Length: 219
Image 1 (cartoon, rainbow, N blue to C red):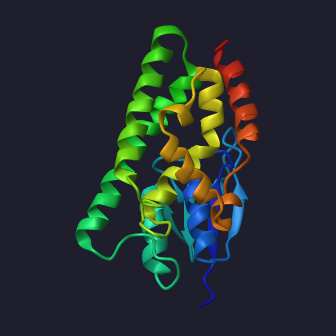
Image 2 (image 1 turned 135 degrees about the horizontal axis):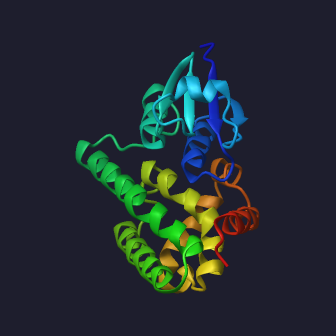
């Protein structure tokens, strides 16, 4: 097809990881560019002038911003391989609902487990576990949220697995003891090459978070 695909990203970003997984699962060759968010590239500022954030997917010179939108774009454009969204309209709506839930609940609560102290930390831990338990209930007895194969919701959520170690260590709690089925699901996802090669090592993320904690004055 001669498609030119560029991904502007930042390695620890769970939002960027989603696009990395999708591109890998579908076998889409692309130019990966890791951004310095303290000194954003002219291309990033040009391609996402509204939010000036990663990830940005650039397909034949045209930018697609916001990870959930870009993920759906990837699935629609390269729909012949490893479809992510279900074909059934209702199931598709449910996958989008839970993806939206992840972005509204997991990111913020998770961030607070390493960036806050005292009562605020305890509250954020409780919020994170409650949200993860709801998601675990939605998974039920299925192998993946997509059923027998990894789907849209799996790709949306699994990047956070690389952050769990940091959440647990700085928050002093165990996600596995609270949500064992969810951790088992994450480990199944990690058996997929598209996932394991797209997610950074959890200890590397932990070291990155340590730097952030010092920067923010969290001790």
